[in-house]
Length: 321
View 1 (cartoon, one colour):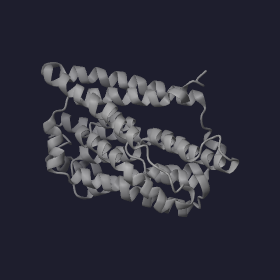
View 2: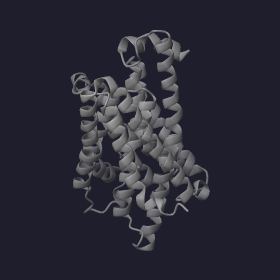
View 3: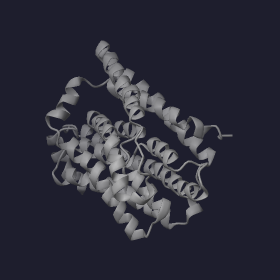
View 4: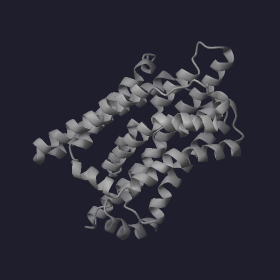
């Protein structure tokens, strides 16, 4: 019944991302992004976590769990991916920092043109063809068409209707969540992956990798007492990655119609990519809901929002208890 879904999954993701960018943009202004750039510490630390720390965590997990072949390659490929479309929905749900999340997506996606081939060459040299090239034009096109374009339109709509900008945002976000729900139903119904087909060790290793990336990327924010909204945005961005790009690269590196050995490695890479995509969703949801609960608690108490340093410091002690 859902056999059609794999062929249209990328289009679903593009529509979803565009809707969330429209919704988030309606409540934002250029000044919000200027604040991120004037104090780039959160952006810099989170970006370093995605580009540098994440592949190192992947190598540690590969060593500890004794992973090899396409499974190890799949984990390294996943670690090299920038933030994905669903991350924006979860940042909105968590009442995180939209400008930081969007800035992270744009920066990490454009950087991926260089960082992904470099990571693969350093960490998975034996599996990557010497002539491997990133789809540069496609990456730039996706950023322009499905991130920056809808964001600009949303900001324009919000500026033209300042009294209704929250209503406009709310409806775009709601429709975006409907698309997310449809993606989940179709993905489960298509049975593209069977979680138990690789035993227990591999799924456990993938989940451990996702949890470690999430927690280690948020650790500097928590230790230094930085805004909670920045903390959750960094955690979600590094957890919910652009797995559509990972699938595109998998198809380029290991086509299904290639030699049997190549196809076998590709099947293992595919398993890691798809399992991680599902695991990230179920890990990101409770994180978002918990931070949303903390933000709403602060509002009820009349405290400054978690997006400010003062509010974060005032509420950090109670949130740790």
